[in-house]
Image 1: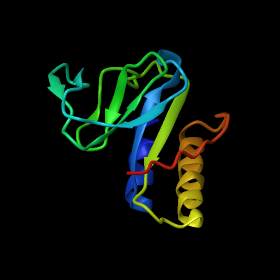
Image 2: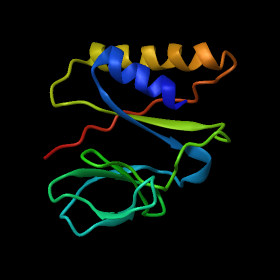
Image 3: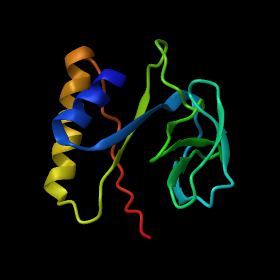
Image 4: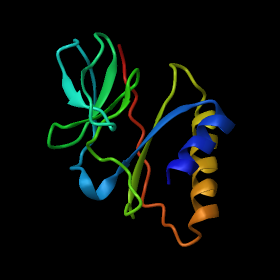
Amino acid sequence: VVEAMFMTEMACGVLASVQDLDSIALPIEIDGTDGGEEYVRYDGVSEFCKDGDQLMRDGAGRILSSIAQGPTINGLVTGHTTTAAYCFYFVPDVPEEMRLAALDYLDRAVRAGSPDADLVGTTSVIATG
């Protein structure tokens, strides 16, 4: 799961994140930060978001990741993960065909390791300002 994400990042030149979908609450929201948001990183260290960053929260309000600082302990993918939610961060004005190419590459990379994997769906959220 994580290897497929890294392969896609390298092949397509995108930044991505992955969460264990069974351990988070939907919907996932994207929000800006003011530097006061505290979370526990995936390595167990407490940290504050950087002012002006973007983060993802789950439906319970838990911070899942920030662009500048990466994943938190919430939704952490482990060897027991069976359902994953991927997110790509694109700069503004990236053409639709490039976004679709990244999704296609990810799908093929996941299936290379898990041929019986199912794509449940995709959603695009365009963050502004």
